[in-house]
Image 1 (cartoon, rainbow, N blue to C red):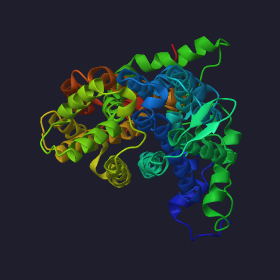
Image 2: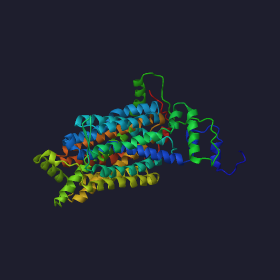
Image 3: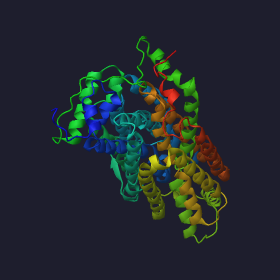
Image 4: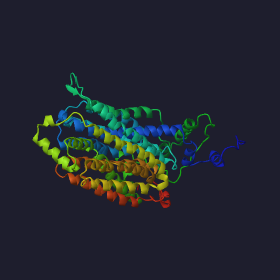
Length: 525
């Protein structure tokens, strides 16, 4: 073995290093088949979160007769899954940081699918709201934890790119939303299910289809081990080494000899979870308190506000996007060529109040509604792929400021533009601030050590989901009476987010400041 001089000197130094750090050991696995597969599965999980939480936006537009929904109830149904995410995020963050990333992700994906299937059989608003809440409660387990799980399988060189790669898969998977909605919802069949007295229409089947990525992702992860960085941070270096060797075999096959790693030493940022207390509540406090004191307080506040703002506009404002597009299409079909979005909304409200409720609602949507939704998801697909390529070149700050500013301006212009097609495009651009959600998620992974990472991401995503709830209910309660205000609020908040991006610690260098790398993340005083 010592006579093999054909290898790169740097690789040889790593292979013969007596005690490599975790980062050095992980680098020896190379970047190959396993990484691509994990990125694909992670992207599918992000797609599952999208479909489970935003698919309801198509349902409320066509199920108002079946469920007897008012505008306010539509907003509640659109937001209740995010409420489930908010309430459970802290729990999943704690469990992910103390029990394991995979041990949270897999069972919650299965449970989310079960809750979705149950919701497809509900016949009234309250039962549907309860099931959608449970869907959000369980899908939360994977929605934020997957960032930490994926990032910890990659070195710092590929960490952000792997997350953005999964985001590109997520964007591609997002194309399923309008595509599946068009294929499934725009049908006229119905089946009466005996015993439960449910008239099964296409929108119910659509809900089940939206849950399938959760099921498929959970099955795929059954064959993948726990995050090696997590088990190493828990003191189980033997299992971490075995996982690293397994990754190497997956990536290089028989092209190279198996890795010979006997021991891994901890670097300065590998914090250990304190296990001195047997109280779960004390452990939760130990996981949470450090995020809100010292130099962690500033970064936690900023990433939470950024997630709140981007989710307020991207997810919250999306809830009524299909419905408003459908109203705009109906207005154009009626010969109206000059009108603002809010004028159409007010006109639809008046026509609904003056006509028979059951005759006014529709079981299908105009085809242009699906067309613009497809365009939105296509832009996300290309955008995430592009960001993944350029993020290390132009920097994360430039991306955040550009996206936040453009989306904010577009949101404000929606109020004034009276050309329907142009107004729809501005509305669409407003929704593109979802790019920032995943970029901030990648930044958050880098801002915290292993033992606090999942909790930090979960809390920031929890606040982001709160923004989704606020946005959805903002439209539900204000759209019919103060439409202009519903677009002015997110537009203004996004401008604030653009300014806040400059204050993210280490954002200009793309990594944590050197003085912070010396601080032990295990401090739970």
